[in-house]
Image (cartoon, rainbow, N blue to C red; front, side, top):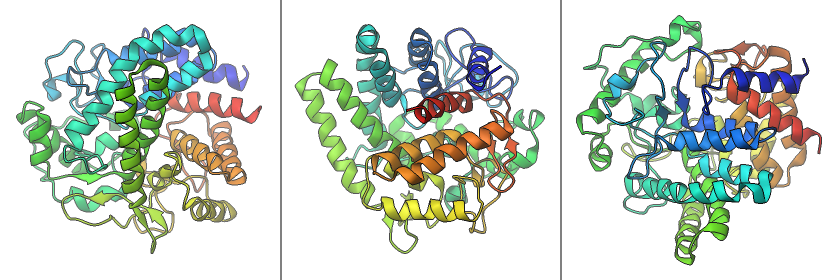
Length: 418
């Protein structure tokens, strides 16, 4: 079986009827940003299936515009916390928090690949994408600062990043919900978040459930509140892609509104640059100030189209490559908090690399972009379609036969042929 065939086979094996689970058992439901990347992977060989991925994710959209982190299309006992813990009476059941909004970017990608044949399906989902971006504005930036707030580490997709350590200390460890982790029954506990982090994660779920998932109350009450540089950068990129869709399907008023948000976000995200650390950082919205932890999320403003510091960011990546460090580690390998095999505290993630490489290329830094892309393909080639990779010894870690890793390999494989 060729590499392309192997990647396609993983998507097919993880297909559960129009939506793709990240991997069997460990993640048995549809995850928001996973599916956006997976839709782009499907689009390399099956447009109908790519659109269906997006459409099925949007089956979980709330009336207020939220596209939740998880859509529980079918029951499973293999994951905690399941629908009963979230306590959200919807069909299908969902979680009550978002994930990084890659969806408009995915929709534009699929449409531009599909051409005229995809217009009807793109037009049908366009209002839902508009509603989702308005949700981010109303629910997470009601004061129109230009930066959206994150209220739970799971919302970032980078669950236990060292960037959250100090802010998470404000979250109590007591929970109403009994914690029954399933993840450590599927993969080594050394690869996963620690128990105390899970206690704080579930405390926040309990707190938000107690508000009835009221967005205003959640924003007021959360003891964890940050302006995550990764989420904000991905949203800025998605706003640009939504504007491109609005040029085809939207009104003049919608285009003006989106363009205004873009201009504001460009200014305030640029302000997340920290000169002493030479990196874009997350802002602590409770403690105040930038959180002095360099993570892979700090490269994502490149993906958002902010290129003023592109050369400095590229040089850091190039320096890691010269040292033999696998690209791009999720935490600075010189930091005391770096753990090369524990979830988001060090390992390499193919989806983040794809965004970083694209941002570098758009900034005109093709050599570094090529390094990130080729290193990602090397890691996958050596260790298989793993959830993530150890940047020191290149081992594949976490779940195996992972959907978004397969999708990114398909995208990078195509790009390498151009």
